[in-house]
Length: 415
RNA sequence: GUGGGUGUAGCUCAACGGCAGAGCACCGGCCUGUGGCGCCGGUGGUUGCGGGUUCGAUUCCCGUCAUCCACCCCA
Image (cartoon, rainbow, N blue to C red; front, side, top):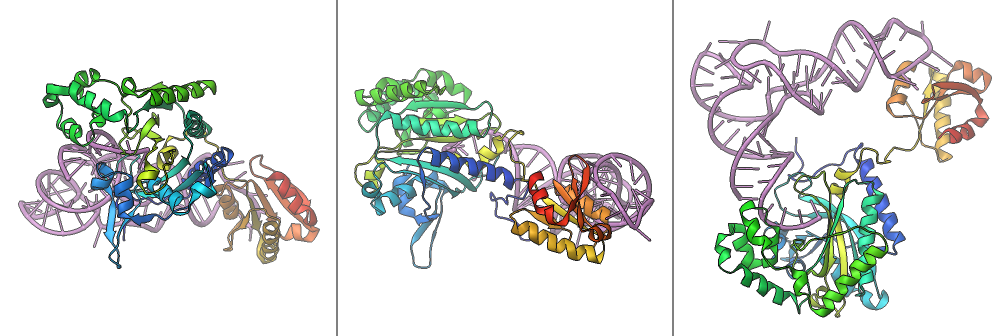
């Protein structure tokens, strides 16, 4: 046997219905909120992520699937979608043809990490991005879409957390204040925090080491250092969320690991995922388009982990397969007639099957039952002689004779 | 990359130095024209892989691979 690559998974029948349910709702909601689909390649130049996602991030430093292709190009399997979306926005001049572009995409991402619950090397995301709009109402609409997805899927006990990390003007001031406040205490923090203080000081807030908490609790908060413009923006976002009745919790510890975030950041946390509890996360990235060579356009978006959404689905999720018909044939004449019948049903747009290998009636009925059949049609010598078909409602356990000509209509009514 | 748990039938799990088992699932029969419930029978295993200790290893030891959980980080 040649097994699947570590951290990759087959999605088998039985689970794939859950995926289809999530994908269907995701598309429907995106379209309803005015987002249009875009599809970008899953391989890009390494440089795109180095510059876009950020050299200091763990993603770029140790998690990318990067290799040299036969032409000597350094290519990377995308670890996230945003840089590709920005690249495409710039490359095709969408800033002119689609001012205020609202785009969504779905597909696989790749990160070389140790797999655990809710974390895989090939995983899938729904990604949405809104370019060229800086009003706080846009932030609120993006969060509204994210929250509608969670509630629409019926995921219980999810929590929306928001924060603002400031902009290129005020973030450096906050960062300096953070390090100043830390002062001599830096040496008392864990090794990870000491490393973070150099690479990305804001991430000290992610620390889970109990001994570090008293020190971290005493550190300043980014919202107290926002410039006037950022403060006004953040207030606007919260006002809009309140106006549409979305419940949020503000956390100064929500900092997020990607370099490009500015102003609003947010996450939705689930209860059933163990340590990997972020169902979706995102924020504003007002400098990224320009940084990647485009015009000075703002951007905001989020990525939702499809695997995590599927894991968080409630038992009651409406993923039931549509009704199906199954034809049971008795005898050679019956099999010939049954074959005609399923062709007729299929051409009428109705899902129908029969047992293609000759087996006893009992075995055929059992198969129909296992396939969660709603209607079973029985065709044997008796029915053929009368020009009828026996139609059995599997759930009710009731059956009746139906004229051969009326079968399609009768089946359609029961499905 | 670091630490820990677990690998036995398709699935969930027993056996824990001495003939590898059960439940569910699958196939057949009871019932030569009726699924779910029942009864009877059957198919299915190099006990993840490699090495070691032993008269004998699923069991003990080492390695390796996979997987799960946690850290790191993130969706």
